[in-house]
Length: 153
Image (cartoon, rainbow, N blue to C red; front, side, top):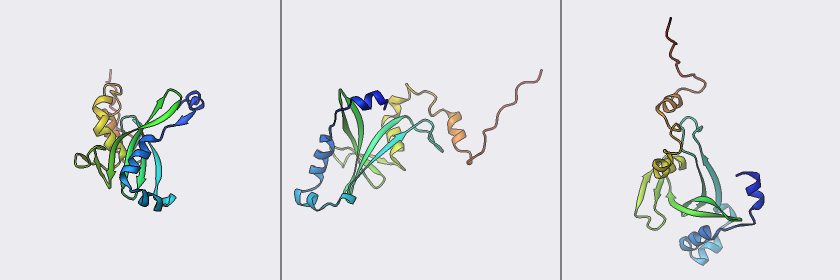
């Protein structure tokens, strides 16, 4: 986030996160949770990820003993807020509204965001996951891709 935007943020709207937690745990269960039972992780997917590139996407993961909430941070006027996009249990990602409606299992969060939002992002980042990039990402660490020799004259 540009420094100018960060300085303008006055509040962080955590309603999405709190409402999800309240729906997930009873009041008594929530009161028994320890600080180490909950964590918030930032994830930044990128075309430069190696060994496999991913479409650019920022997400946060609210980790709990009863599954994790995947949310997208969003800048709103002078506040930062979150939009819930999935619930993760193990490697399985499901809809927030109904955990019976699942997207599938994915190796990591960036694989999920590629699946879920990649078709929309591909138009804005046409070279992000090109065949050439995919082939280069499959090379062992430190190896350089083969370069075609220029035609002889």
